[in-house]
Amino acid sequence: MKSSTSVLSFPFAVETATTSILIAAFALLITGVTPIAVILGAAGATLLYFASVVRSGPPKVTGFPIVGAVDFFTRRYDFLTENRRKYGNIFEFNLLQHRVFALGGASARVQYFSNHTQLNFTEGYKVLFGGVPVVTKEAVGTAEAPANMPQFNKRLLALIAKKERLAEGLPVMLSDISKEMAKWGREGVMDPFVDVYGLVFKLTCRMLGCREIAEDEGKIAHLTKLYWDMEAGSGVLPVLFPWFPSQAKKRHEAASMELFKLVIGVIETRRALGTKENDAVQFLMDSGDSNVDIAQFVMGSLFAGIINTGINSAWLLLQVAQKPVWRERVLGELRDLVIRYNYNGDETVQITSLNEELTKLPLDSWEDGLPVLEKCLREVVRMTLTGATLRRVMAKGFVVDGYELPLGSFVTYSPGDAHFNPQNYSRPFDFDPERYDPPRLEDKNGEPFAFLGWGAGRHPCLGMRFAKLEMKIICALALANYEFAVADANGKVLVGAELPEPNRNNIHTQRPAKPVYMRYNKI
Image (cartoon, rainbow, N blue to C red; front, side, top):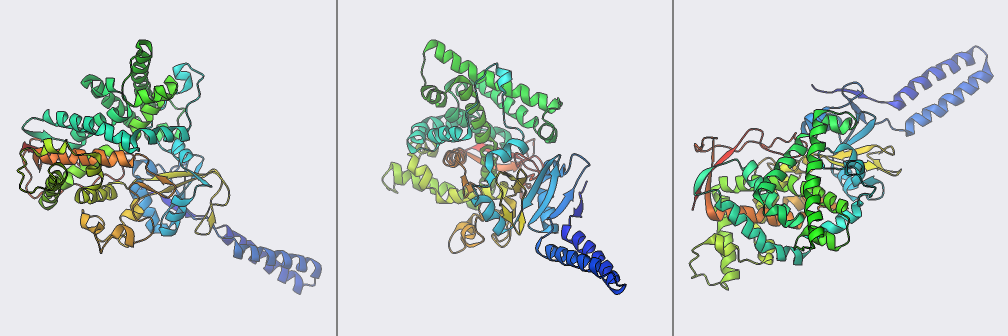
């Protein structure tokens, strides 16, 4: 269903009324009714001036009666892209009683990501973004108020943005991934959007959860199921009608509550036994946080940490492993890194196990010593992060393209507007990591904020450092251990097969538009 469109033109209506008034005034004047003619003439002139200075509202895309533009949930990327092409850099649509303004173009993008006084990040996502696990005070039987967003951000920064914390966790992360990949065996067929996602679950739970879950295969599998149940329980009905007891809402709430109980159980057991661990839950316990706040933090951070990192890790391995040139460049870079850090640059050294050598590398080498893998990662993020970011107008005076957006309305911007703009990126739908090399530097030489993969302006991604580390480790260890080829579900190698496009209309993760598998063989 393609949305119909109507353009609200208030000045046009004013001008029409003014014309009628002026004609009436002229008729009265020539018939001798001068006083009334003067009054009507003055009124007409005033209205005509008013119409000349007040702009019409932006084009309005209408959808279903009452509900509004359901396409924003069912085909989000296409809905935003198609209507921006038709109606320019700002248009309006409704979701129930909510007015939503979609923005595009460089000027609006700068305003959107730089504004911190009139646009609110938290309020935008709270109302129009489904899937986030939330457990109400009534459900847990407590009067405790949940921690606020600044407190959440402070805790997140302390756990995964500080160098000492990541350096301490790096050996365990490397060990976890090596052990998990060993379970793959010498050969087989994988769905990277299942198997690689599993690695991200493990690492994220290790760094943002607790040891008791991260090291228990049964609990990790259960957590994974709960995550997918929560994602499946999001969508148009739970978001627009949160009071309606739909099956999706029930599924989402049941999964959220079960995850809450899983985390709370760990916390209560630790407090009862007086045991201590070196993990995120212990950090929060030692910081004086309540059981409810700790559980809510773990649930929210797991969701935020997995939702994009999992999908990008899978696409990164697919893109690099499927393209021989980039696979060899990355492998060569990894070997050079090992020689530089582990053997003081002695190029005569014969590396017998690249996997083992990689597990010895310090944090600095992973963060600063892999420019080839870094630009491959950057390209994957550019190509997959195309959904919709959200804000809410919380103060008057936010003007875009001549329109002042009303207080309480919502604003959305799709990174695809920048990431697939040929003015920023040549052949924007091609995987081309060299676009970030001098002299091209396409992410910097184009429009402002041309790359939005890790946030921009006032809202950078707080988990960027950890997410990039996860993605690099997974891709590096996979390439060090296995050769990959795109295959069908039965393991038949598809010679010369092109990777499918991401399903950019998925509101949470850009999985492939059709299934894709990889055959792997141990090196």
